[in-house]
Length: 137
Image 1 (cartoon, rainbow, N blue to C red):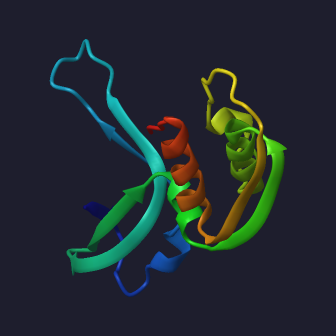
Image 2 (image 1 turned 180 degrees about the horizontal axis):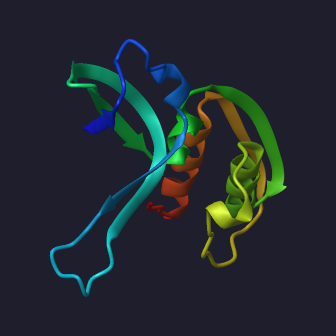
């Protein structure tokens, strides 16, 4: 939940916020510990209530990788390893080297890999599962 000061719910354009970068910072009770930070993008914003010049919103924070599940593609990859395919797809979707890190050993090059009417997220997840590769945020 988010409280927006000095905002009327009718004046807020929540559609503009979808896909925007967001960060949730949770302070810990022990001041010696650094705050817990969750970064992502807004996957959904909903106006719930206005009161006293403030608006209460429901915000859904999702990892940026979530965007890769929103469209379908068909393409072929030849003579590339699974990590090379993953990196190519991430870069095609606007990810840069600072956005992800691949800590992998050497993988054999696949003769032919086909993506058919599948989201990029489903495609890379399927191949990662097949190869025993995992990811986390």
